[in-house]
Image 1 (cartoon, rainbow, N blue to C red):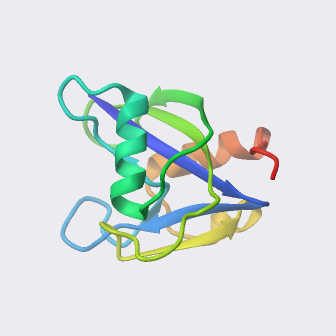
Image 2: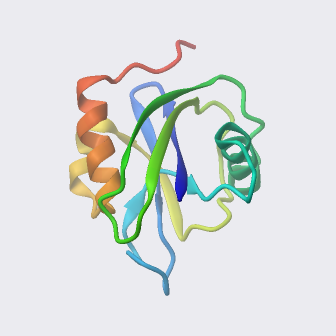
Length: 130
C-alpha cells in the first residue's frame, strides 16, 4: 500500500498537521498525508488531497524521497516537496496545523514516519525559491 506525503515549504518553515482523535497516533503531528484511491497516480492523489484539505491548487511539486513506513502495516511512503504558497486555514481532516521552522520540529510529538522525514529534511532542506 502507498501513502503520499506533501512537504509544504514556505520560506524556512514547513507545514505540520495534528491528527484528530480516534485514529492511530491521535494527537500527534505529521506532514499532510493521503492514501491514493484505487488506480490513482501518486501525483494525482497529492493534488487531490491538498485541494480537499487546504483548498490549494497545487503548482510546483517534485518527488523528494520514498521509504518503507515505520508505522504498523505494509506502507510505502512517497514524500513530495510542494510550494506552500496559498495554504491557509481552514484545514479539513486535522485538529490543527501550523508552520514550523525545520529546526524546531523536534519539539512536537511526531508520528514515526514524520521523524524519518525530519531526518532526511535536515540533510536536504531545499524548497522552491519565491
